[in-house]
Structure formats: structure tokens, C-alpha cells
Amino acid sequence: MTKNYEITKSGFTVKDTKTNHILKVTYKNGVYQGVVTMPEQSIQLPSSDWKKGENPFSNDTCFEGRQTGYSPQGYWWFSINTALPFSQILAEVEALSSTGSFLKKLFMPKVKNKAKLLDVVKKQNQTGYMFVDIINDLGESTEGIMASSKLIQMTYGYARRAAAMALYLQGLIEKDGYDHNLSFFKAIQLKTEQSVDFQEQAFTDAIEYMQTYNPIITRMLVKKMAMIAQNFEVPDEELNDGELISIIMETYTN
Image 1 (cartoon, rainbow, N blue to C red):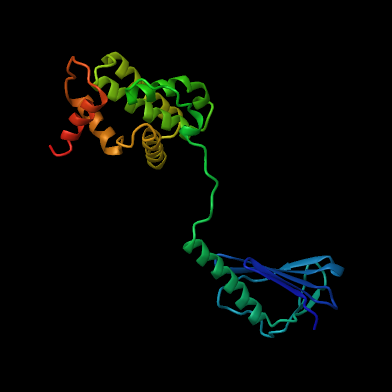
Image 2 (cartoon, rainbow, N blue to C red):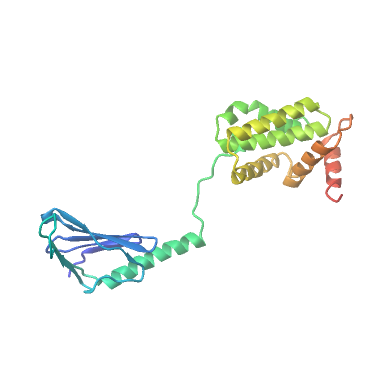
């Protein structure tokens, strides 16, 4: 018999070469759903659902049915012979579906790299103070940042807040300037998204961005700066980057 079937991981179709009757079956989440089409009778009939591992076909090479009582559609009948036994068709569908699931578990699908803060900000300041460079570069790119995705906007908020904390601890901005940046951070949180996953990703991306200025800027460093800024009085003298980092490093073991 000529091949008269198609099999995919999502189901199968069999079309009888003589009657032109069609059995189309979808397979999803371990459940089969079928529809029989009889073109010359202008009738479509749904079959009963069945689960993976079951075989509803009493005849492995022919699926037949006919109307035995009253039907609003009138008298109907169908006969669908298959060149490949139904049991083998079902086995192949389930094998293809399982292979797809296995591959998804084994390999992560490739995704296009999404734009990040570094793609929007032009790094052009070189003052000798890394956090001054960060906050100035961010400030000069604000228009592009705020026209970008919510994630980039929130990443900007985290990077700007971290830079402001450092500048406050270094004595390079007043407390009013520091408080203004904290208020801006809270405002951008409300504007974007407040879920834990989203905020964690934004913080991670901010650290990644700031490490392009100096890899010493880590999550721990930023968290320690926040703790010091919130709980200690800032001295009057100005600190350079090296002095600031040394002071923060000392808190790692205290």
C-alpha cells in the first residue's frame, strides 16, 4: 500500500486512498485527540481522547465506524485504512515527542543576546575616580537609557545608586545628593518591575556593567558600601579610590 500517513511529535494524519476519509490526531501532554473527516458527507466527528501507551484501534490497519442510531447529521460512515499499523504510528509519535523533551532538558535553546546597559552608555569619562566616571557616563547617556527596556532602566538605577554611595563615602558629594539618588532609585523601581527575579537580574547586570571600569566592583563591595552609608557617619576628608576600597575591604573580616 502506498504511504498515506504523516507522523510528527505533535500527532499524525492518515488519509484513506480510496474513500478519502481522514483521521487527524494531535498529541499533547501525553493525550491524543482525534477528528475524522468525511469530505463527501461534509461531516467531521471527534473521537474519544486516549492517553499515551493506550491503543484504541481494535483493527491495527483499519479504522471504521458508522452511524447506528439517530443522528442530527444524518447517516454517516467512514473507513480509513493505513499503510503503517496504528500501533507503530503511535509508537513513533511518542518516540519523537520524547526525543524533543530529552533534547530540551539536555540542551538549553540558543537565545539572542539582549541589549544591556553597556550597549547604550558611551564610556568617555576618565577622571581618575572610577565611580565619578560611572555616574558621569550614565548621566550623559540618560536619554538613551530611558528610551530602552525596563531592565536596562533598572540596571541604570542600580549602577547609579552604587556610584552615588561610593561618591558619598569618598566625600565627593553631599548627603543631599546621595539622598536624591536613593529617591531616584526607588522611583525607577516603581516605574519598571518589582519582582524578585527582575530586580536580581538588574542588580547582576549593573555589577557586570561597573566591572568594565574595574573588576574589583563586586556584589559584596556594593552591599558593604550600602551598609556603611546607612549606618555610619561619613568623615569630612576626601578619599581616593584606593583608600575607599581599602576601608571597605577591612569590613569583610569584621
